[in-house]
Length: 430
Image (cartoon, rainbow, N blue to C red; front, side):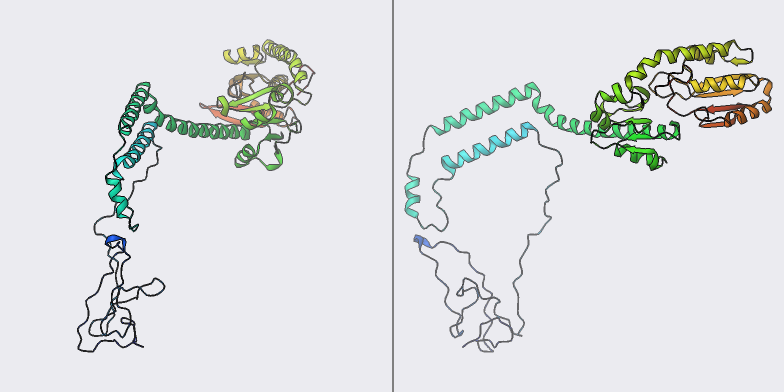
């Protein structure tokens, strides 16, 4: 049998001095006039019956390769790509407005109706071979009622667009989606900021021996601030009460979990609050005897603080600035601070310059006092420091140091949060 032209390693069917046949391009499958099937090209001359280039072989495949030029080098067909820059669709990250969606829908509907009415008639499908249907279609009259219907629909669409534009729906739909996304992002940022502020404050202010109840996210934030895992009581959504802790960080998830029981039963005393609204984070003191007992003891505890403060102010060894004296009279000073001042006054004169370190966003409860020595005698401050450091819980301060303020030496004593109830009245319900 003769070899197929164009295959490597096979002799060509034509003579060596025969000129190479020009490369043939496969003609597209077009219907023959009259609907007849296309005929295959005749075999190449001298091919000994082998199919020529571009001739279909049995099985629907064409013979690969073309006649090689003189020299024996085979030429392969190369797909030609269009020259010039290729336009890439621009990335559209914003959602289309309602006006654009409505206009696109109307455009598609009208184009389809136009194709059905007249643009699509008289064009036979390729390869059907039915010219008689084409002739019949061309002579068929078009329906006269379709054009008024299209005009009516277009008029209604225009009226609808004008009404939407006047109402402001088209101009505000896109901005509403963007604003809602921005609101969600700002809410997440506000929640994270409140959580971080609460974690930083609790790490510095809550007493070192207290157990803190928190949700998993808040516990992670507290650990990142240096609190040991042994001081944390993770709260799981299983309905368990937080009575095993001393303080609870009431994040939004904790408030949703416990509801009104959080303030009515478990933790009635608000120590500090951060943020606002739904993202607010509260730090509360847990009442071991319950919320009812805590609220019942509040009036007596406030009266005891006022009485102790008034007694200090009447002492000749006790001196306080005008602002500090008002805070003592109002009962805003922590009971542990008042007891410590009374113990120091019994030994030597004490001069209070200021109170501080109350929780943000709550009623004042000053847990820190700064003491200056009358006459600038540093020896008295050193003796006061040794005395307060020798106390036991709950009167052992979280910190007591000698500081230098404006060229003067002072002693700063600080107790951890939260303030304890009933130390002066004898009705401890915390």
